[in-house]
Length: 138
Image (cartoon, rainbow, N blue to C red):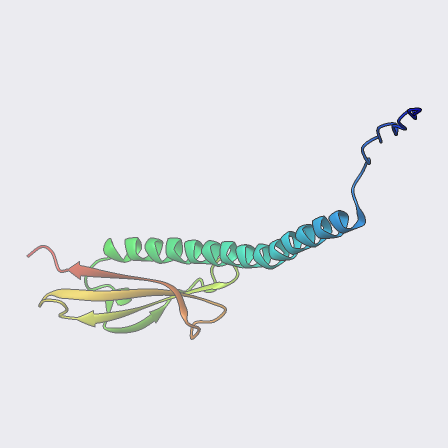
């Protein structure tokens, strides 16, 4: 019996690169991530813009409230009723108005609701501040 030499195959080199399926799966995962960002970025931008507008409106309302707190009790700006800022629109877009109610929350006090809206005086308010102006002195 003669023994045949065994035929051994030379070892194969491992395949280099990625298969087409792996590339397609990676592309789909990447595309889903990009689409998710495309949806989220405009939402974030809108919220940042809204926060900026509310901050500006709050600042204007606080400034007017501070001015009204140092205004004499019998001044025309503190007469009962609705008032608008003579400088409207402020910052080219914001409208300040305030409503004075006499004897609230107590006699010899005036409750003042300061509101700031964007676009027009009658638009929905972006910010509001309520203060009480007491009559002082004797």
